[in-house]
Length: 214
Image 1 (spheres, rainbow, N blue to C red):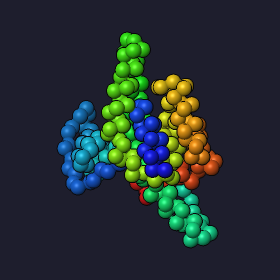
Image 2 (cartoon, rainbow, N blue to C red):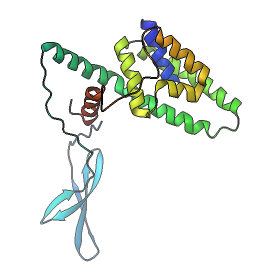
Image 3 (cartoon, rainbow, N blue to C red):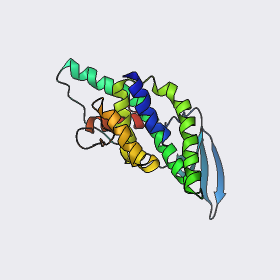
């Protein structure tokens, strides 16, 4: 079973926080135009423009979108355990899903610059070897449920199923082959992420993790 997680997770990979710590700040005032005061706020490690309002320096910044969820109601201790397990698994797999999404975009953009199909195939084979070597030790530590969750989170980040990604990069035959292999373990690479349906709790956890709320 662990070998299945190795292969299934690496297959996807090979296709291919907001941690601002306000340690201190200071203002550098300047006079512009008709005597109006402006300044710059240095909030380490970021720099923000600022204005003076009645003698107070006010930083101007664009805040992230924030989603507020109503509290969850748990009907049993088992529900609490399952929710905490989901949080643990999302924190473990969501960073990988985002890395995979970035790799897919970069790989696609680079392949568009290659002149021939032979050159593109050569690049894919080189990427496959590199990513397999790089990510296999990490992926081998995932549990079966975490591997299944990773497949869904890749869909969340790329808006494409694992089957679609493999089909697009490596062809229909390999996509079909890998999906058959996954079927032997009761899974499907064609499964889609449903944030408003059966995966709504997973989506909630993903958003809260991204916001740094949990």
